[in-house]
Amino acid sequence: MSTPFIDHYAVLNVPPLSSPSIVSKSYKKLSLKYHPDKQTNKTDKERKEAEEIFIKVKTSYELLKDDKLKMEYDKGLVEKRKKAEREKERREGMGLKRKGMVDELNRRESEAMSGRKGWMGDEGRRREKEREARAMRENLGRVREMERVEREERNRRKVEKERMDRDKVNIKWKKGYGDNVTE
Image (cartoon, rainbow, N blue to C red; front, side):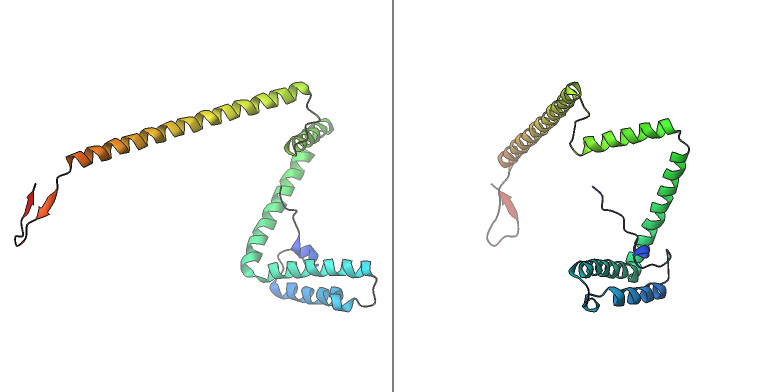
Protein backbone atom coordinates (compact mmCIF):
# COMPACT_ATOMS: atom_id res chain seq x y z
CA MET A 1 0.00 0.00 0.00
CA SER A 2 1.48 3.33 -1.01
CA THR A 3 1.51 6.44 1.12
CA PRO A 4 -0.71 9.30 -0.05
CA PHE A 5 1.03 12.03 -2.00
CA ILE A 6 1.24 15.39 -0.22
CA ASP A 7 1.86 18.53 -2.26
CA HIS A 8 4.12 20.39 0.17
CA TYR A 9 4.08 23.50 -2.01
CA ALA A 10 0.28 23.62 -1.79
CA VAL A 11 0.44 23.22 2.00
CA LEU A 12 2.66 26.33 2.17
CA ASN A 13 0.57 28.19 -0.45
CA VAL A 14 3.54 28.76 -2.77
CA PRO A 15 3.97 27.93 -6.46
CA PRO A 16 5.71 24.64 -7.30
CA LEU A 17 9.52 24.71 -7.41
CA SER A 18 9.63 27.98 -5.42
CA SER A 19 12.87 29.43 -4.11
CA PRO A 20 13.89 28.88 -0.47
CA SER A 21 13.23 32.52 0.43
CA ILE A 22 9.60 32.35 -0.77
CA VAL A 23 9.11 29.05 1.06
CA SER A 24 10.59 30.55 4.24
CA LYS A 25 8.36 33.65 4.12
CA SER A 26 5.25 31.58 3.61
CA TYR A 27 6.22 29.23 6.45
CA LYS A 28 6.70 32.12 8.87
CA LYS A 29 3.36 33.63 7.93
CA LEU A 30 1.44 30.33 8.26
CA SER A 31 3.22 29.24 11.43
CA LEU A 32 2.27 32.50 13.13
CA LYS A 33 -1.33 32.05 12.03
CA TYR A 34 -1.71 28.39 13.09
CA HIS A 35 0.75 28.11 16.01
CA PRO A 36 -0.93 26.37 19.01
CA ASP A 37 0.03 29.24 21.35
CA LYS A 38 -1.92 31.70 19.17
CA GLN A 39 -5.14 29.66 19.48
CA THR A 40 -6.04 30.54 23.08
CA ASN A 41 -9.50 31.99 22.45
CA LYS A 42 -10.66 29.21 20.06
CA THR A 43 -12.79 26.13 20.69
CA ASP A 44 -11.17 22.74 21.20
CA LYS A 45 -12.13 21.65 17.69
CA GLU A 46 -10.66 24.81 16.12
CA ARG A 47 -7.48 24.40 18.17
CA LYS A 48 -7.10 20.80 17.09
CA GLU A 49 -7.60 21.72 13.41
CA ALA A 50 -5.08 24.57 13.73
CA GLU A 51 -2.58 22.22 15.38
CA GLU A 52 -2.96 19.68 12.53
CA ILE A 53 -2.43 22.43 9.96
CA PHE A 54 0.59 23.71 11.91
CA ILE A 55 2.14 20.23 11.91
CA LYS A 56 1.60 19.90 8.14
CA VAL A 57 3.10 23.34 7.55
CA LYS A 58 6.11 22.53 9.74
CA THR A 59 6.67 19.17 8.03
CA SER A 60 6.41 20.73 4.58
CA TYR A 61 8.85 23.49 5.51
CA GLU A 62 11.37 21.04 6.96
CA LEU A 63 11.29 19.03 3.74
CA LEU A 64 11.54 22.05 1.43
CA LYS A 65 14.30 23.83 3.38
CA ASP A 66 16.69 20.86 3.08
CA ASP A 67 18.26 21.14 -0.40
CA LYS A 68 18.80 17.41 -0.80
CA LEU A 69 15.27 16.45 0.25
CA LYS A 70 13.79 19.30 -1.80
CA MET A 71 15.64 18.12 -4.91
CA GLU A 72 14.36 14.55 -4.46
CA TYR A 73 10.83 15.82 -3.77
CA ASP A 74 10.88 18.13 -6.82
CA LYS A 75 12.04 15.25 -8.99
CA GLY A 76 9.21 13.07 -7.67
CA LEU A 77 6.74 15.94 -8.09
CA VAL A 78 7.69 16.39 -11.74
CA GLU A 79 7.40 12.64 -12.34
CA LYS A 80 4.02 12.55 -10.57
CA ARG A 81 2.69 15.39 -12.73
CA LYS A 82 3.97 13.78 -15.94
CA LYS A 83 2.33 10.51 -14.95
CA ALA A 84 -0.96 12.29 -14.19
CA GLU A 85 -0.83 14.06 -17.58
CA ARG A 86 -0.18 10.77 -19.39
CA GLU A 87 -3.05 9.10 -17.53
CA LYS A 88 -5.37 12.01 -18.36
CA GLU A 89 -4.44 11.86 -22.05
CA ARG A 90 -4.89 8.09 -22.07
CA ARG A 91 -8.31 8.29 -20.45
CA GLU A 92 -9.43 11.12 -22.75
CA GLY A 93 -8.63 8.88 -25.72
CA MET A 94 -10.97 6.15 -24.48
CA GLY A 95 -14.65 5.91 -25.21
CA LEU A 96 -17.20 5.88 -22.39
CA LYS A 97 -17.77 2.14 -22.66
CA ARG A 98 -14.06 1.43 -22.50
CA LYS A 99 -13.63 3.79 -19.53
CA GLY A 100 -16.34 1.87 -17.69
CA MET A 101 -14.63 -1.42 -18.48
CA VAL A 102 -11.27 -0.10 -17.25
CA ASP A 103 -12.86 1.21 -14.05
CA GLU A 104 -14.55 -2.16 -13.44
CA LEU A 105 -11.28 -4.00 -14.04
CA ASN A 106 -9.43 -1.68 -11.66
CA ARG A 107 -12.12 -2.17 -9.02
CA ARG A 108 -11.90 -5.96 -9.35
CA GLU A 109 -8.13 -5.91 -9.18
CA SER A 110 -8.16 -3.77 -6.05
CA GLU A 111 -10.72 -6.10 -4.43
CA ALA A 112 -8.61 -9.11 -5.31
CA MET A 113 -5.47 -7.46 -3.96
CA SER A 114 -7.18 -6.51 -0.70
CA GLY A 115 -8.21 -10.09 -0.11
CA ARG A 116 -11.92 -9.67 -0.79
CA LYS A 117 -12.98 -12.22 -3.36
CA GLY A 118 -16.67 -11.50 -3.46
CA TRP A 119 -16.66 -10.91 -7.20
CA MET A 120 -15.22 -14.41 -7.78
CA GLY A 121 -17.62 -17.27 -7.88
CA ASP A 122 -17.01 -20.69 -6.33
CA GLU A 123 -15.25 -21.79 -9.51
CA GLY A 124 -12.90 -18.81 -9.36
CA ARG A 125 -12.07 -19.48 -5.72
CA ARG A 126 -11.43 -23.16 -6.50
CA ARG A 127 -9.07 -22.25 -9.36
CA GLU A 128 -7.29 -19.76 -7.11
CA LYS A 129 -6.81 -22.43 -4.41
CA GLU A 130 -5.50 -24.87 -7.04
CA ARG A 131 -3.02 -22.24 -8.29
CA GLU A 132 -1.84 -21.61 -4.73
CA ALA A 133 -1.46 -25.35 -4.06
CA ARG A 134 0.47 -25.82 -7.33
CA ALA A 135 2.80 -22.94 -6.43
CA MET A 136 3.35 -24.40 -2.95
CA ARG A 137 4.17 -27.85 -4.46
CA GLU A 138 6.66 -26.22 -6.85
CA ASN A 139 8.28 -24.32 -3.99
CA LEU A 140 8.46 -27.50 -1.92
CA GLY A 141 10.13 -29.29 -4.84
CA ARG A 142 12.70 -26.50 -5.16
CA VAL A 143 13.41 -26.60 -1.41
CA ARG A 144 13.86 -30.38 -1.48
CA GLU A 145 16.21 -30.11 -4.46
CA MET A 146 18.27 -27.44 -2.64
CA GLU A 147 18.46 -29.67 0.46
CA ARG A 148 19.58 -32.63 -1.68
CA VAL A 149 22.32 -30.53 -3.31
CA GLU A 150 23.48 -29.29 0.11
CA ARG A 151 23.58 -32.88 1.45
CA GLU A 152 25.63 -34.02 -1.54
CA GLU A 153 28.01 -31.07 -1.11
CA ARG A 154 28.44 -31.83 2.62
CA ASN A 155 29.12 -35.51 1.84
CA ARG A 156 31.59 -34.57 -0.91
CA ARG A 157 33.43 -32.23 1.48
CA LYS A 158 33.47 -34.91 4.19
CA VAL A 159 34.90 -37.54 1.81
CA GLU A 160 37.47 -35.02 0.53
CA LYS A 161 38.54 -34.16 4.08
CA GLU A 162 38.87 -37.85 5.00
CA ARG A 163 40.96 -38.48 1.86
CA MET A 164 43.21 -35.52 2.69
CA ASP A 165 43.63 -36.75 6.29
CA ARG A 166 44.66 -40.22 5.01
CA ASP A 167 47.14 -38.79 2.53
CA LYS A 168 48.60 -36.32 4.96
CA VAL A 169 52.35 -36.56 5.52
CA ASN A 170 53.59 -35.59 8.96
CA ILE A 171 56.64 -33.41 8.90
CA LYS A 172 58.84 -32.90 11.95
CA TRP A 173 61.90 -30.79 12.51
CA LYS A 174 64.92 -32.48 13.96
CA LYS A 175 66.69 -30.72 16.79
CA GLY A 176 69.76 -28.89 15.71
CA TYR A 177 69.20 -29.40 12.05
CA GLY A 178 67.41 -27.07 9.69
CA ASP A 179 66.27 -29.90 7.41
CA ASN A 180 62.82 -31.34 7.63
CA VAL A 181 62.36 -35.08 7.53
CA THR A 182 59.21 -37.06 6.78
CA GLU A 183 58.20 -39.99 8.91
